[in-house]
Length: 220
Image (cartoon, rainbow, N blue to C red):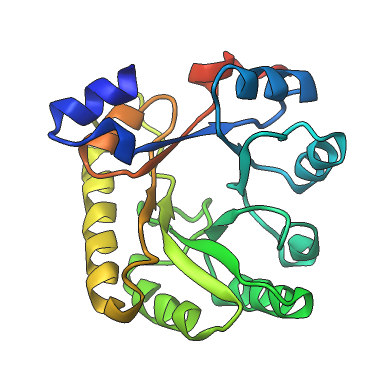
């Protein structure tokens, strides 16, 4: 309901924004309950948890995205096992995903992660280097660029992230225009979490990643 209200208040259609349930540290049973309650997309942050939940069949009935930091030495455990890898933020990781997808004979959908706040503590490509990385992704036969993802700086102030979301939307528009022959595939702008997803929707997000607002505070 909050997503729908945010969409309508900014002149958008609620059905154009997807909800990704961030299932970090949740149990198999909690994930199954969320899917039974209507969740159709789960996002996993950690490779170890992803593989355990997959083995248990916890995601049955929903699609799965990998939304956390992905190390190149764990690419084999993720490529081909999720519908979308949201967190490809470097050429090194992009080429590792391509190599593994090639071995498996498939095309892996990805988002390019942008370090929109230019924070040293976060992964993602520098906004100024996004275009070359997008062009590389477009040239690789075993990855399909579906859009962009970002995690803006944490702020306790309401609305503080809207400028970052607005910059991400402009990058998204620019990449869609510049990658015109691949434009129909580039349809996902993943940004916004429990504390700011309404602002992200107002600024153009097509997918929000929500954990705490769905599941409550994370268990220890």
